Image (tube, rainbow, N blue to C red; front, side, top):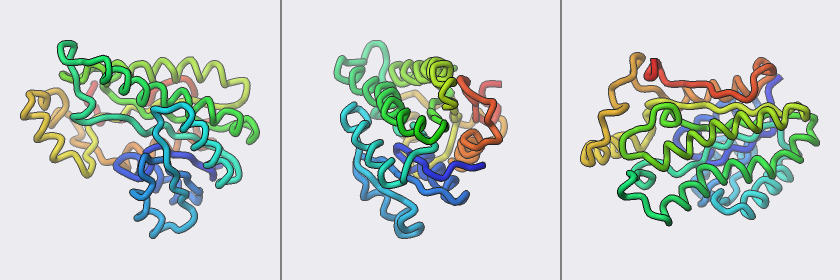
Length: 248
């Protein structure tokens, strides 16, 4: 069976939008969390009330609780939570020399705290459904940190560890927890991001290094949809790498 009541943080743009559309293609309804829910307008125009746009800053624990509860009410429950939203790109870049207390606190609040508090808020709803799935979107940077992404990579590594712990803790409730680690995925912002990375000497770590070539958001989304389905019912507490062979 495929889950039908889905929450996707950051589900209106880039990889998040592809994940949302993968579930919509399978007949689900999706609550999409964004700082500005207006960015979900194209999805609403295309899919109507099967998309529920809601405002949330996942760096704020109270907003995580409100968002998940509102999503569960709108959907009539929750089957799957996809923790996709994260601070990334040039705004997330830092080195040991340049990291500031404010940068570290905000990065960890969003990229780690957001997963903890959205998941914590979703668990009662998943228990009420008799079980379900939490999918955490991490990164190959968790396994091979990229130059200039010190705090980002550390946060994504923490997500892998959280996934293992959550998988064990929630197994008695029939709640599976899996991380998905994308590699070099071309999104709408990729061209400008690559230009900025090269200008700062950060481009050589991943760009044009993937044996299968650059991936698409749908390559990640299809894996997420599979992992949320009953076809993956014996998978939990682990990370699936979707990198086109980059780490091979």
